Amino acid sequence: MNAAVVTFGETMALFRPADPAEGENATDYRLSFGGAESNVAVGVARLGGRAVWMGRLGDDVAGRRIRRELRAEGVELRVTVDAEASTGSMMKTEIAPGRVGVQYWRAGSAGSRLHPDDLDLAALTPATVLHVTGITPALSASASAAVDAAMSTARATGATVSFDVNHRPSLWRERDASAVYRRLAAQSDMVFAGREEAALLVGEMPDDGLVDAIAALGPSTVALKRGAEGATVLAEGRLLHRPAWPIHPVDTVGAGDAFVAGYLAESLRGAPLEGRIDTAVAAGAFACLGRGDWESLPHRRQLELLAAGDGDPVVR
Image 1 (cartoon, rainbow, N blue to C red):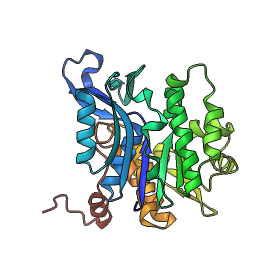
Image 2: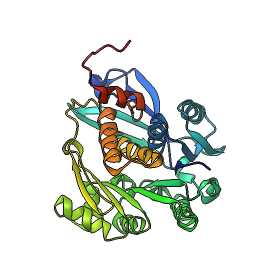
Image 3: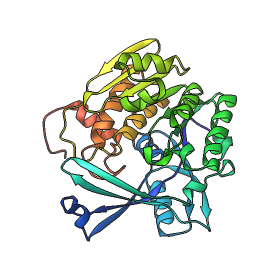
């Protein structure tokens, strides 16, 4: 296989009000889909990289739509169609100005029944990047086993392992997520986390200390996603800080996935560290400029137009 990002997890149907201002009183909803790992796959594909997404979907309208849309975005699929369980779903509403709430209906879903046998582990080669998140091991015992199997195969074949903490408190409830995250980080080459997520791994401390402490677990690259403050990345023995783009965010859901996609897409291209971080920060900003989990992820031509910066608001 040529250089590619290979990822897997649960992707669900997404319902959101056609008019976000109506909040919970909305009667007109739009149907889309979302999932951290498939968001990353779309982001990588839009930036010109090869992306493979593996998962388990129901034999239903939502599952068929997800497969169709991901293919249309240029993502290669390895999907198990589950005839006994439905595709999970979620609803996103604006609960206060600038704050979005997401509710999930995923118990017993097809995605939660993900199993090691659903993964095409032969897709992992020294040229690939395996990307996993902390969401998948929380879904079920079989999904957690799938993460372990994929990471073990990746380590054995020489693939690069990328881990985004992507903490979802509602999935862990009374279980200890921190211990699982530390174990996954120790087996990874790259770790991505927000401030609070990083603290789950190593405790509360200043940003540079968080990055150093996570690196001490084993990964050679640690990227701290700092939202409106930008990013801090430790890689190649260097610590770099990048400010965020000055934007007026519309919806921040998916921004972290966009950041990861930008970094991994540039890694596939062999870009220097500065280029990887700059694209990651830019992609994260783009994701905040529209509604939806993945719809606002940038294509490379958009980043190139922005870099050109000729000031003309109309491109002909």
